[in-house]
Image (cartoon, rainbow, N blue to C red; front, side, top):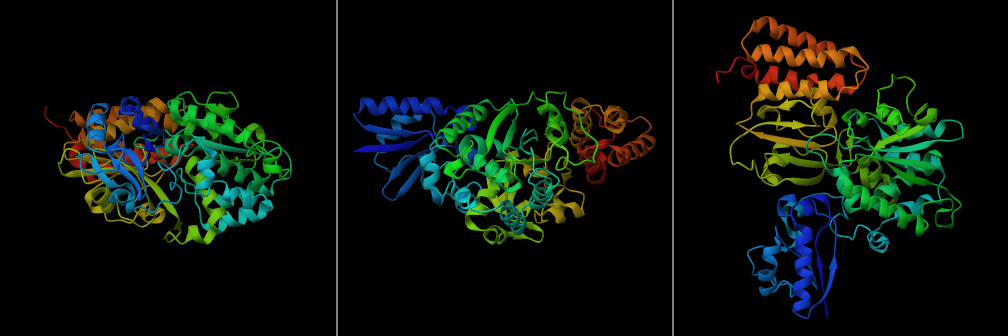
Length: 514
């Protein structure tokens, strides 16, 4: 009788020693004459428990974590292979872990459950079900389903995905492209990486659906070079999808055509902006383009192009499989469906939390995150990446919703949530925002290129106690100029964290004795 044990193979688990755990488990099984079926699954997204080892039992999978290689012998002695739960690292049934049980996983329903590279495993968990249905639909019907779901872009601007697809669909027939923005550069974010490492066929299916919807037969994934594991796993999944007939000139015998390739970025944050990304894909230096024309009209190589990020495309297979209304039933107001939130920074239980829009930040940080890792009081939280505002305690009870956040100048963005305890220097955080922009600006427009440099200088003078009132007014004017005059969101949003510090933590921009 064989025993099935799961040890994750994604970047986080590997960084925490998952390979050593897997090797030690194999050796121990051999020494004890146990027939072991070791599956390298993806992460469940419960990072503080990685490597999270699971064992299959007749009553479901049992979890143990965080497991080090040195723990393996004692776990086996305590009955790991028999599914016993007497060991201190035993967590009980995986699905009953509150952090996981209390989520609403639609997009991430398979991560950690399946072998990321097994097409059979993917299909056994409703994978490609949406594509099989879509192969019998015309493009407009697919676009209509996405529009009816209420899905909005999960990258930053939250533009309705179906409207963008409709624009490309309505362009005259000819060469069109699907481009996936996988240049996940926001601090504290990792959801795109988890899709590509733990459920890569999900993105392949979502991009193929986009191609069928708008009449595009070529797609590109623009992946950041800092994700080598994602690149390896996704590239292998692409090859297997071609072999199985889910990509290519005759998808599953339907006569429909879609090809997909991966292109690596070179570490520039600005290439997460869609027009810079397109320039980079074309082999140019990543520079922001003026709009109009929109990429949906004149995008990659001057052709109509859908540019969506990983999470937007990964949401589509569920919509085509389960129906638009099943997706729209989640959420609040105009923010429909679920959002994969990513808890990071000074947090006790960091990881991925997929929930319907409407949960408050406080519930997320306390009920799921468990507060700070240091045990000290929370002071501020930054949502939406390095261009998001720093939110004080008075805003933590706001529901996570695009419109509710916009009302106070916040952004939901890619769903990154970075927590800070009461030891953080908010003046230094404001300076970092300007410094980050000065380093990462593409340099095309003056407000961003020059404004960020001047912003660092003004904040330094403020913190040195020089002409405080004059420099405070100058910083406010500078922020307004960048917001109103920058060509893209990079320069236009860099002031948001600075302005939030000026408003909510003004004392920390003044001279502080060392």
